[in-house]
Length: 329
Image (cartoon, rainbow, N blue to C red; front, side, top):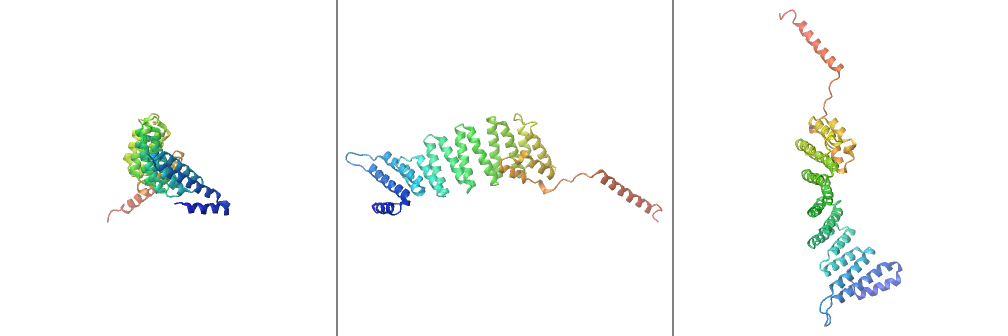
């Protein structure tokens, strides 16, 4: 939005006629003042050979905050971008401009600006800030574009891992795994869960490793890969405390029921609190798990039924004997 002297006259008139507009009018006038200071800062003269970009950026930063407080997000975004351009590509200003676009529900453009800011943070030697910016961008876009959110979280996790901040990295990998499951990208989810589990093992968070083993098994069974699911459990016995744990016993029963195509046993395990109170995406996997063929294992016959069947067979045999007792002729 461009303002000039005519705009100022109109705004001053509106300020007199419409007191309710006072806040917005004052903000715009403040922006005009900052714009004038910005232009003055960039002007050169006989005594001033170089433009003062720092002062210009400072004026636009003040205008951006004023617009933001007045909820004039489009103008705030414009001011932040001008600040960024004036202050040798100010990284934080690009991120703030992205947040203004978020308020305007222009999420795609917002993420692009935040990604640009994160690349600048990395180039400037502040990778932690870059990773946090990517994490924020992922949260912005998660509800409208799962694939983009996965990409952003993976980038952030990679940055933290390179900085050997494994706890922050594994937390972001957890988001990646859950979103991959939610979008039914199960092959990629299996790879992500394995990496996540190994990272928890590296930082010696063994109880969480048990939970990740359950998630692995659910993903592999949904892929109809019983062998891979069984392998996940066998490998977990090397983790201290897994052998004999509630998780290990439940997984053995689950694999047994799945192998025997016993839907009743599988459903009973998947409806247990151990599975139901996992992260929502994994709990849904558990509740929707079906054995191959969708059949229910037949229950064994009761003693009375078995005796009845034997009696019928014996009577049929006796009738056959009577029929041929007098010979074939």
